[in-house]
Amino acid sequence: MQIRFSASDEAWSRWAPVLRATLPEAWLSRDGDPASFDAIIYAPGGDITDFAPYRNVRLVQSLWAGVERIVTNDTLTQPLARMVDPGLAQGMAEYCTGWAMRAHLGMDRYAQDGVWRNELSPPLATDRTVTILGMGELGRATAAMLRGIGFPVTGVSASGRPVQGVTVHPLADLDPVLAQASILICLLPDTPGTRNLLDAKRLAMLPQGAWVINPGRGTLIDDQALLEALDRGRPGHAVLDVLRTEPLPAGHSFWAHPGVTVTPHIAAETRPETAAPVAAENLRRAMSGRPVMNLVDRAKGY
Image 1 (tube, rainbow, N blue to C red):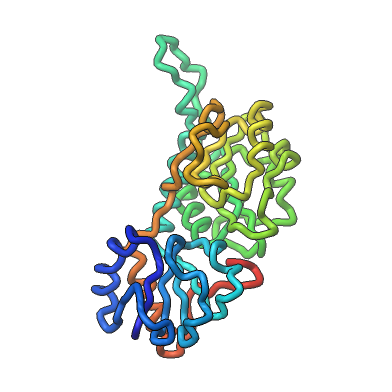
Image 2: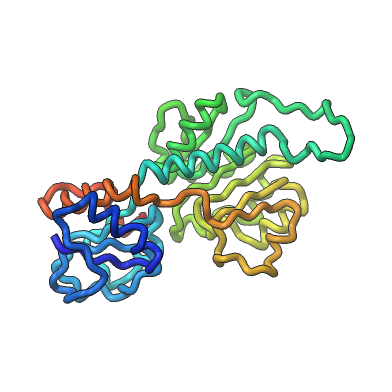
């Protein structure tokens, strides 16, 4: 099996040793005759923009869960698989749970200024519903962790497919769900149907003081509408791990707004140690003609 690795130099240094140990039967390279390769391992930052010469490739395995930067490439006709990695799911669930707990407990209310504020005790988790937009692998992992603490969880997904222990609504029912979302976690993919989903109208539907936690895609929220909504207290705070422009420019209004916390796209990372076995299994499946896991639906974009 000959595999072309197309990702950044930094990714190559981290991934190559682990992939070679996990997939010893493969020859892994960053260069060579395109017609000689059986598969491509891809992440943004790689050098392949034209997939047409790779006519013998049976699978393009993405190292990222999101594939919006590649799925619209007209030269990509080979099967494309996104990464569904247990380590990535755990990292995302931990990030979302940590920020949900901060919002729930009101940790930022207790200024260390000598004022005794014991009237500001939080409710129990069982008394506060958390709403998750996007009930894919990451959404389900996050819901499971939050439910383990005691939060009732409401989910919204394009399909409305049931998830055990979660009240799931179809995306068409988003508006009434937002009115009950005191903690809203955004994990939807970037598609034409989700861009600017949280616009001025929908942000105004949130309860006063609600928290929005977005480690999904920066395109889900209308930036200017969010800033204006924060000034009105709906939502009360936004935690943004994904932005339309990354790194976020130093002069951007998000840095200065007291209602925004920016984190530098660190919510969930694809770790070679947990993701390489997933990639290896998928490549073996593709080479042997077996069904590939996590195959991307080009029409849906994920």
